[in-house]
Length: 120
Image 1 (cartoon, helix red, strand yellow):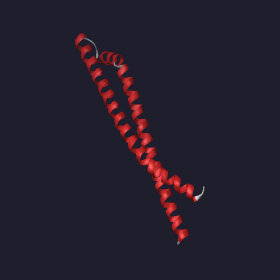
Image 2 (cartoon, one colour; image 1 turned 30 degrees about the vertical axis):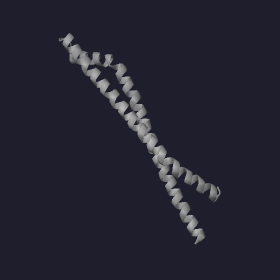
Image 3 (cartoon, helix red, strand yellow; image 1 turned 45 degrees about the vertical axis):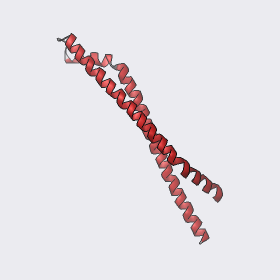
Image 4 (cartoon, one colour; image 1 turned 90 degrees about the vertical axis):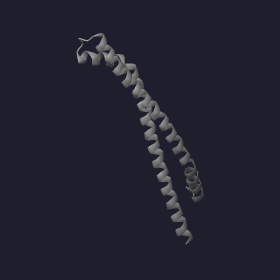
């Protein structure tokens, strides 16, 4: 790769990556909020069903109450799992972009050092 092309590529990446980091951080916050809401909905449904089952059937064992709650809150649990997956993916994307940015900054520093050595 020629020096000019490498410099242009480094400059372009140094300009683009911070905005990608910012966008991914914003997305991460959105996904985290959605995951927390889904988790709260699941826990609420689980607790509500346990309470209703215990009230409607006082002779039910704790195992029966728990089983009924698990079955009736499955939709909420699946929604929570899906939101958690989106959140974890965004976390990994952010980490990858930050690593890319660190790599580009290192390339830029090496490039500047090399230019100074040849000019000096």
